[in-house]
Image 1 (tube, rainbow, N blue to C red):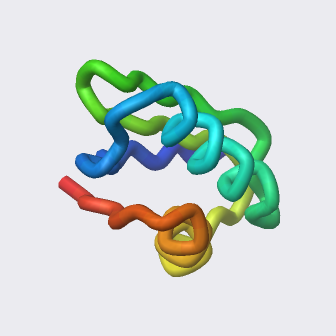
Image 2: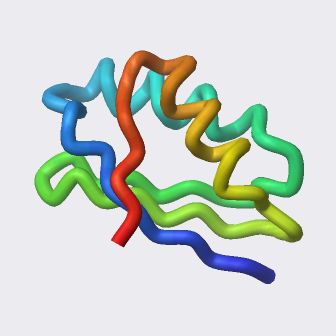
Length: 68
C-alpha cells in the first residue's frame, strides 16, 4: 500500500471537502481517503497511485494540490 500526504489550501467548507473526496475516489488505485478541513491535509492510501492523477483529480474539483 502506498500512502500520499498533501494539502489542498483552497478548501474552506464541507462542500469543498466533498468535492475533493468525490474526485479522489475516481483515481485508479485509491482505496481510502482522509481529509481534514481544519489543517487542509489530505491522506490518500492505495496501490500504485500516481501523483499526476491526484493533481488532476484535485484540479477537476477546482482546487490546487500542494505537496510537501
